[in-house]
Image (cartoon, rainbow, N blue to C red; front, side, top):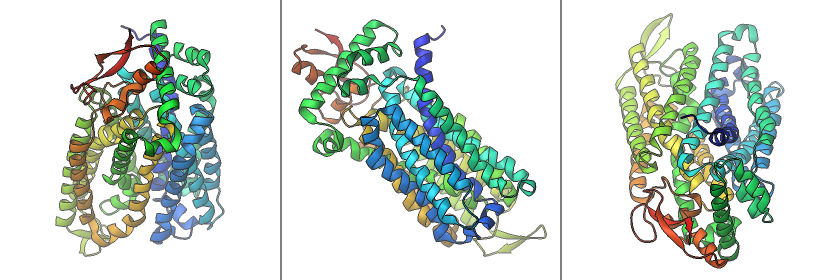
Length: 525
């Protein structure tokens, strides 16, 4: 059966919003890609051999993203709209791209300034994008659509690494354009976002939240729901939930800390998003070039990065059929367990096998863990294990972290909470990125034992602390965390009447204590 026009349009608007993640994937991979360029290194006065400055380039990006995500992304998305947040983020990325690509020779400060601004742009876009998707996507396909959100990160990496590989093949003829080209290509996606955002509707929840613009909210819903009955039922739910939030729980940053159930969700979301980066993925995505240089020759590294980014796309798509079938907790636990095993074997193989110094094409044993390489079979085995790590990471802690974070918060705090939680990724990442180059040089492959231990702890944390959210409607998510049902409470405030409890999923305990039952507003008595 062919999908309806409404469902196709739902996918279109969601993928436009998900394009914000291409920005993130591209830029998070750009520095790792160009750091393998001898021309880039020479242009900035041998920056690769200055560990503190080298780490600061990444830290600058994450600082910008953290500031925007924690303090500006939520208020902007709430005040001006979710689309405005995406546009503002894209425009900042465009500005920062020119700063990075055309920084004066030797002036690493301008390059770092561009990294800060591009981080600000990411912080705004990554706050507005997932909120937009979750406020318009039908609940039955919310997990599938948010899988594309994470997959688009992989698409950004895919483009960055393949552009870099093509440039490295022709680095002699390109000169400094072998790294500039990689940066300039980033203009493609923000320009596309700015052009397409005006073709998608603002969310109905934002219209109701700002001046009770009921007709505009209804018109927005009619573009994404198949029947008039669906439109009116959802519109009523939104009105009731927002009415309760206005009169009883407040909104914005204050409500994040005064509402116990929201506070609980926020702390869990912080842990999950920080965990996403300290699994080892954040480090691999930023420093895979220097890691692979320990086991491969330099001219092979750009190809391996490109292949890794290519495989990441189908790996991420595994979440499409698993997130809504097996649930979020299942993916978190299985993913963490798989990554732990991969990190254990990588560390063991790396330590147990000798390093060699290649002189004139001859392998000479060496104790130099910084500049030495592994023999080809060992190098291939380590690369395979890191690809396998990606296989476990992408559909679980990659995609599912975004699904869980963007769906658990109620309307009154959704933008602020999503922005803060998502930027916890960059807080964790900036800490690890700053010390990892020195850590790797001092300990060699033993450093991967740290990531193994982290993944074991994350699996335990999810098992005991994180509730299942599969199939639960956004307006009823509060019940899972011990909060009031905003829809039912809002209905009572306006005198609509009692709501009937119906099965909406198997994600946790409802008010009546039965698995998978929450107070639903599907039926008005």
